[in-house]
Length: 167
Image (cartoon, rainbow, N blue to C red; front, side):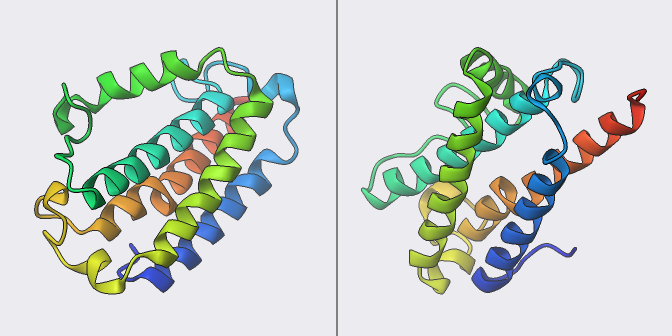
């Protein structure tokens, strides 16, 4: 699938990739979902928490930017080259959260992200530097990264793990 370049294509892509991810998860039981080793030490649950956290960060950056606040991405104390540190923090923050809570949070976040996208004018999504905090990127690229392409990444990691398991 090519990278979405507009709101409609992104909404279609994020819906399709989210549905594929959920279809992949459907046959897994709770024990499988919390088994480490899917993506390095992460379990499926940890991957879902990761998806949730990144969506919430992007939504938070959007809200803060709309209020005129100075937005520091990816975190106030980190550069983009340090995202592994941020990802580890996310893992540590959510590792003890129950699977059911993570699944519910991701489902709600997916819906919240889609609703936010629908409410953003096309020009604001596709114009580079429309928001100061996006630097030379578009807001759309942030949404692509935290939805459709992130869902596809998660599905790929889980599929690779499933192939290594002995039934």
